[in-house]
Length: 119
Length: 131
Image 1 (cartoon, rainbow over the protein chains, first blue to last red):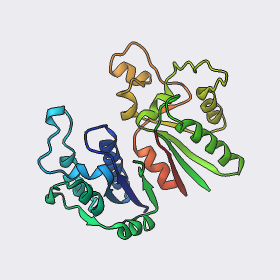
Image 2: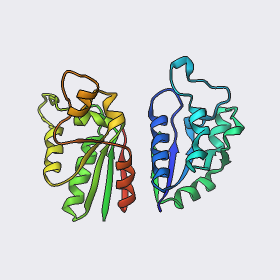
Image 3: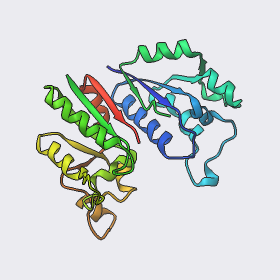
Image 4: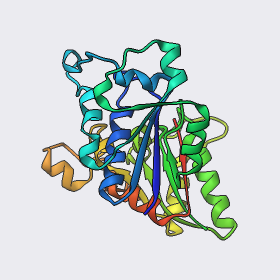
């Protein structure tokens, strides 16, 4: 079984990239992968409280994130520094753990495959 | 070593393909194997059957270079979800959605995301070429 780390660094509604990354993560989990997700840079906006994709006729990304544990994706991390820099009020119910840079280094080091790290 | 590659950038607007093709050719020259090249996001535009390369003094013909890799036995797989919403359809999808013609080049095939994960799971290395 491979250990996957998906790094999400895009904001939620500026493109379809985040949704497609999350779909890929779900497929990896469905194929017995051990999947972790790290939100960083503008990717931390995906955790913003009270967001709704309805106004844009798009799926609400926070809802997609809240469904990850049902795909057995429960290693969920967010970059503490990116959060602090943007002052994002995150939805605590989504269960993402804030981690510092050394913890992120360890996450990358302990993964077999790192996907989608580009800004 | 076995490699899986993914191309995310569109032809003639991103350098993703030039880098991916160059990397793939170098891998083969060094005796490595390529499990699959997966086209995702705007990378799916590489698989359209209607490209006209820009007429410049360099005449880079990406379609011909992909064709050449494909002739060498490399599988070129296009994400079906990313593809059909951008107008990349094979005969089956053309009929399903009642479209005037198919648009997928014969060099490529439409597949599900499972084929990306399958390639990554098999490969020793996975390399992405972003937009």
